Length: 235
Image (cartoon, rainbow, N blue to C red; front, side):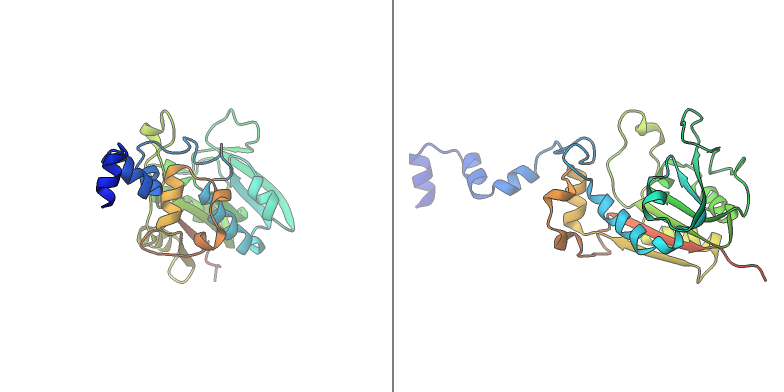
């Protein structure tokens, strides 16, 4: 009956599908809502999990702290800070206090930091195993490494096609960090679900999604992996 009615109204099958399932039609678009992870619409979805992780471990961000590229998170979550250093491989960064390649560690002082905040960086380092070993080396005994890495993300614009190397899983992170820090010193968690992953890929902003939907964690559909690793104390 409805098919004949739609035909009499001159509606094509494609138009009918759009009327019945508008959200599916939008979902099947081959273009994202944003080409910038959602920054142009608000806050990217992955920041929700990154910032919640750092807030949960704000007590670790203390003493001599190190962060990559800038010190935004150290300033936001740190307490009892003695010194904050900024690591970057790019000497043109005016904020950098240490210019070095994390994969080699050359130029980064050993056993010098109480905390290293390392967010969304390891995917850009080809020798990721060496970089994790350097993270352990630069910490003082008892020092804490706070890491976030993507389980899923779009490729960085432009020449990211040449240097955006990795995506991670809970299993790969556990293996990487336990090898460097030792069993019992590493806590790995997944964050996200299929809705969060889909929204992030499409560039939907955090402000457009109800928080209770982001709080559902499905380990089979992680958007982000977080790692808290503690350097073994001597003796």
